[in-house]
Image 1 (spheres, one colour):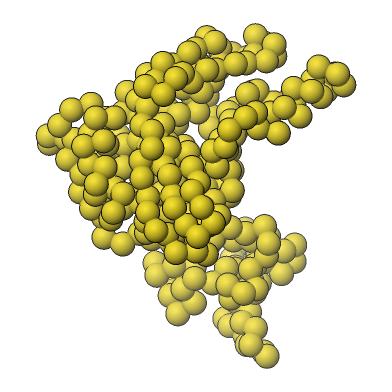
Image 2: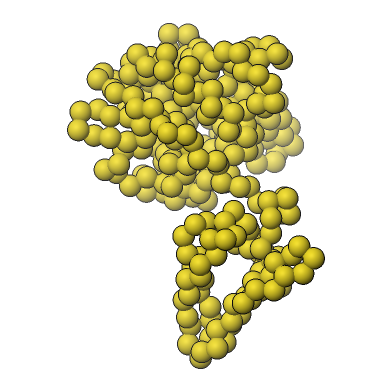
Length: 294
């Protein structure tokens, strides 16, 4: 049942049985609200148009504050907004060549609305005058490329790292890959989504593999070097290691690799050594504290 007072909506759900029960509630009129459990302040998944599933222990109950967006707790990150109708990109050659062949569609029609919805794009409060694919480097993982995009705004020109990959429909992929998709892709009979490759397991595993092997990937603009610290010698990453993505929409992207490491990608590209990497190495060398892997 529901109770309302002074603009606050409270949802109470009680299980009167001596056995566990599951219930599906039609809460579509509260689409977009966040249930916050009032006993401990736990944040539950957002309410959508579909029925809302809850499981209750014997004689258990919940009471929730159905919070509006303005009242969401700071620890909650809303799911990315859905993109408009996807463009379809047809790949006839390898992945990187296909991206470059479709660069006009990507730069004019796909990337501008995509960037406007990304939390990490710090210049979305300014008119976006132009977007260019400045660098596209295919990776040993196959259907994946490290892409640098260049944007022009009133603040000037900036570069951003956006790894791209394909989430094929005939393969199991994380839901995050669909949330971060840019366009549809087709290659012969296969169809899928062009998405931020950080949402695909192959990228994090590829980074860990590159660090383990001190890999150097040659590119037209130079080389990408994997430079591990000494701690990498003690880390073994099995192919089926569990991956846990932190938040899709922070200023940087992070994924936890089992209990071994955290792979963090800095999305704003600038020259020189990144201060966080420099500080971590300094602490490891001079203070003896454990350092992240870079």
